[in-house]
Length: 141
Image 1 (cartoon, rainbow, N blue to C red):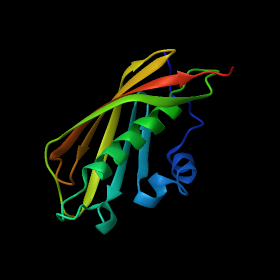
Image 2 (tube, one colour):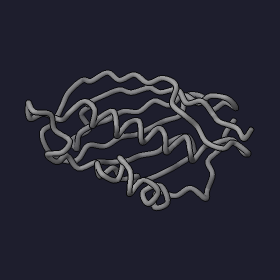
Image 3 (cartoon, rainbow, N blue to C red):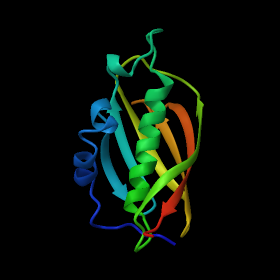
Image 4 (cartoon, rainbow, N blue to C red):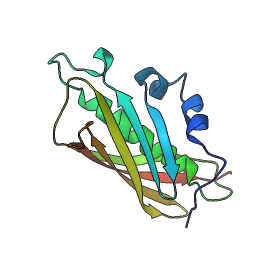
């Protein structure tokens, strides 16, 4: 089973994504622990759909980024990287402003795959989305 790599910090992950989609969306890793990662994103106009509600893709980006960063922090020794092979989200609510939070938790940390669940909630703790993804671990050729 994979264990947390202590060299992977929230600051390192935030810097790593600063010039990519996570940085553009303002996704911030807040904490990393054994088999979990928490993050947040301030809702701004760029996250909102034309109906003035939080765009589902913004929620998926937050949850997928959180699970992906958690995978990076929990790669098995010697693994090179990972890629997402499946994801699913159930949207339960929405917001128009404020900060949304995400907690990713490991369900399976194998040598060839990892499965992560994430819960996205608003500042009051109301669940906005349930998310699950499967990651394929990539090994050097």
